[in-house]
Image (tube, rainbow over the protein chains, first blue to last red):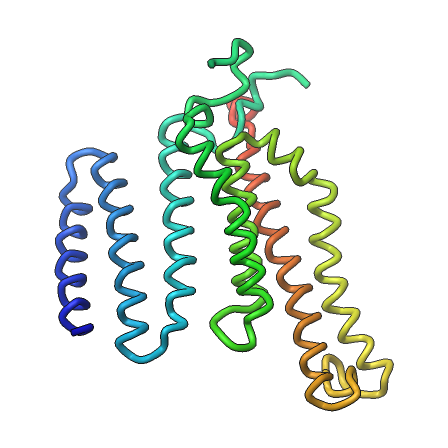
Length: 92
Length: 153
């Protein structure tokens, strides 16, 4: 059963990969990358149970976290051109 | 809601991001501590825990601004902790040397071999975690606080 789920996840991952490569706009690509991260989180958890090591869920949680923060960072960079404040505008 | 003095960027005023960052901040640090102190039994250890704890602070700086991040963890304190982590690592190693064993041989630290190993690994991993998390935060601060306008002039 786990194998079937893993194969389904691999298929959807490949489809999302196609969207990342073909994607028309940058935002399509960012959204697809985020979705691929979600697929990988699911795949890590299922794979952990598949080979009998449920500790892999920890790694999946970390992956989800980094995925979330990474997406926010990339979007913020695209929107603002900087990750921090507008330090240069102010005289301190 | 927009500040007139334009201190915040547009992304940093998004209520969804602000509230999700507030909700996530504590659980991330808790999970980092779990990875830190549970590293002997599951996947984890000082390096991974350091990165996870740093990611909480990076998320905070990303969403509430670098200034608020500096208020939360002042750069001087950041550098102090960075050095302290390496110091703890070296100190544990030198303690075993002073007790007449090679560098970082944990066996002599406790009353039995096992407890010595346990204490040594816990202390060394704590130092590693402290250093890694603070190096990550310092790197983020250095890159995010980069002033592009000064370069252009």
